[in-house]
Length: 219
Image (cartoon, rainbow, N blue to C red):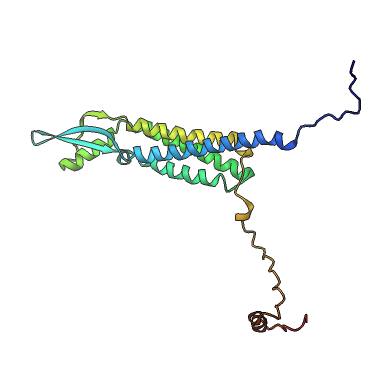
């Protein structure tokens, strides 16, 4: 029968092995928020420039076709998408409470873009305004209104921005921040002392003289 000595060392888990999964999870969450926020902003900006609604206006016994783009209906989604992009970038430049506030702004930007796009889906008021402009009759209105899928695509883009903001609120405290080597605190950096001139190199002697130094002081 074999006996195990009581003095046999028990292997302890390495701190690095425990920290690695947490760091990997943080990077995945960071990448997901980046992708969701950037994709959502791109979708909102693209879709808000497409035709949202169509209709016709009666003019001279005929029918004048009308259409309005998303930004003619409401400029809010595109503006909020730009705010969301700025907030997405700022998430990595701040820490602590600042990151929490910026993440909340990111989420609110997405929610606002989605809601305003959904509310403006019909485009009726914008079409009426265009009918009055095209016919020269302030009382003219658009008829046979139809709307495309682009308002709902815009709203979906806003939801992606919202998801990025919520993810940042939930996991943002564990994400890495901008590297300290890129941050300047205003303190002067120490200057390296010039190396002693080599007496066998005349150019070093001349450089020392130009700096007002005595090249023979260490000789």
